[in-house]
Amino acid sequence: MMSGKEEQYRLLLKQLDSLLSGESDKTAMMANTAAMIHETFGFWWTGFYRVVDDELVLGPFQGPVACMHIGYGKGVCGTAWKERRTVVVPDVEQFPGHIACSSESRSEIVVPVIQKGAVVAVLDIDSRELNTFDDTDAEWLEKIVTLLPSMPSPEKEIWLAAGCFWGAEKYLKLIEGVTFTEVGFANGNTENPTYNEVYTDQTGYAETVHLRYNPAVVSLRFLLDMYFKAIDPTSLNKQGEDEGTRYRTGIYYSDPADRAVIDAAVAEEARKYGLPLQVEVEPLRNFYRAEEYHQDYLDKNPSGYCHLPVALFELARNAREQ
Ligand code: SME
Image (cartoon, rainbow, N blue to C red):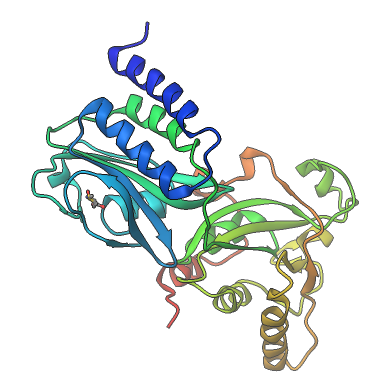
């Protein structure tokens, strides 16, 4: 049986769905979404912050005057953005770094609005009581934010092949400004390849990490400089002990404007070695996500195989673009 709260959310979702259908103005939709949630539950503060370049900026809300700018990773809102997950805070005083826009707020929930893999905004709700929010709120509010229209995202993407993708993903995702990673197979010749097929080395695919990043936090050039620290760019089809075309190095892009940045980075790297590099640079032709088992492999299997030295992870963790 549905709890009273679930029943309220179920109705709210239905009402919002019909209220918003046919509307396309982003501000109007966010404003009425905040208002309806606020009215239904009588919360203290309900509203949106939008991702604008490298920070969150206050959007439509209901409730008292609030902070207008929140940094990436700061407060509950910036944490939900950075970690791309709903954050439930039973007691704001226990949350390190909580930003108190209002001294009356006691508990809080922040739900990221994720569109095409990128966080474009967060929905923030504050309560004057402790322990107001739980998994039920998280679940329903996550449904509610899917009703919002598509919003601009500053995020960009790039696909990097760096040998075995287990270590490459762990390394690249530690770099500040990288907002999302997944591992898969790029620029091959078959449909829906499996890991075992790619492993035969007959499919033309390269083990590749797909990255999204916020260019206001980290530039493509900086990412490529970090990438070069984790590969031997002069080695053809071999990184560490891993050999085969599937372990080739490659930089694959979807935005043609990235080509000049990539060419400049590759040329500078080639000068360091005094040799032509073996790094393939091509537009992305195709990419298939690998089986779940391979995603975040080294987090799931901390003592699993990795061709990269541990010191590199420390380097990535501390790397900051000037
Ligand atoms: N408490 C939030 C700041 C926004 S206000 O609650 C409206 C935070 O820590 O991110």
